[in-house]
Image 1: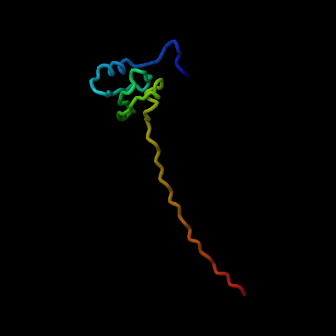
Image 2: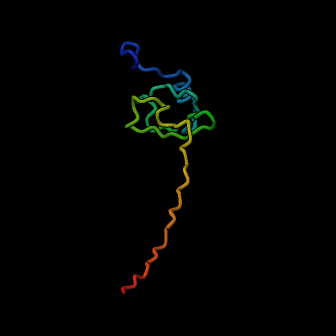
Image 3: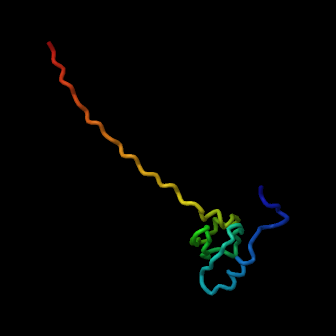
Amino acid sequence: MCRSLWKGFFVDSSLLSNRLLSKKNYFNTWSRRSTILKSLLNQTIYVHNGKTNERLLITSEMLGYKVGDFIFTRKRGNYKAKKKTVKPIVKKNKIKK
């Protein structure tokens, strides 16, 4: 269910204050639920994924989406590839009588 239009976008206040106060080109945030606004364009933010902070560069295609949509919280499953066993082809000699 989407958010009502009259409420507007949700942006955590700490996200905007960190952007204004940081002298560096990046800052850390734990707010994955915040919407990406135009004022965050071309900024690098580090978003907490539950264990570590992952780097995220904001581009124009990301505007309007949530910050957490681009940072995964789970690892991809790694499955070992099964080795295919090749059966040797044995030709049987047919003897004609």
